[in-house]
Image (cartoon, rainbow, N blue to C red; front, side, top):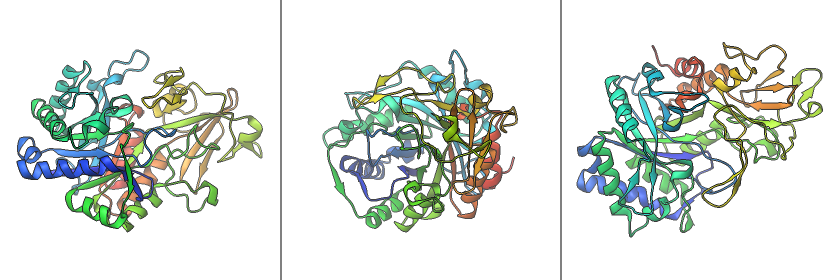
Length: 418
């Protein structure tokens, strides 16, 4: 039986009060009634945000250890059900290269106002096929509950009144579909209360009951930021103080200082980038050299790739959400920014930032500036995972890659073998 808690890059200083009790209840329930270990030898994942319903979007969470992996390390990814048959760029289950992964998480099941009910929203058949394919390929099959719009009722479902019913519903779902684990993605889990907590005390408690803790290290800079910047900086200690807003290095240091063992930490990485509308005079320095933190026009929203909904909506907390302007790795190739081998195309200025160890590319015609990930930045993160003795990686999402450029890079650098 393994437990994993998925956490943001924010320093371990505050957590929503209602979410602190839920992992305790779930862990205690498991130990009292052998809910997870006996029923399906599962992996419980809990995704908690220190600032839920903020303007910064949250992506998704992860997986855990030991089946066809190397040295008990984790090579994980999320499979998104809505992209399985996407009209413009399908990423079907049949195309998953299972040999690249030790764990795969199906996204998403949805919370409902009834703690006894978890909705699969019409994808139960696909989930069944997913579990069968994963097990056939010796990969752990997990299910994520919540997500961008499906976590609305987490706060009430994990409260004292509903928690036992919610745990029972989760257990029944996992048993029915023969899952190897359950993940909570509380993207909009609004806490009923919040309290300060002792980082060392609470983290040591987490470490004592969880096998892994995952840190989501993307969406550090985006359309909500004062300037453009790196989506997922490996380091920012070399940046100016106002640009030090979080990185893989600072997050790992914070959690290990708070008492989490490095061998328990999984680094979540994103196979995509954020785009910004940046005027040429702000983007370009001395010819085609790109600025790394240029100002951008917040009133303009680049279209992103075919997976983007180019409409303005309202999120579950009532906040206005503009078009995402996101480019996945495949979208950058399709959009002409990158070549088939993942390098910048001719005529598209490119810069590698040695501080954040991330790339930037620019389309001079549309004045679209993209902070993204490539083979070099994923290799840098893989090297970091290996050098620090971390547990492994998890990528959002399986279909975001192009010809396995990203996953092959991080696997190789982190020490996985084919």
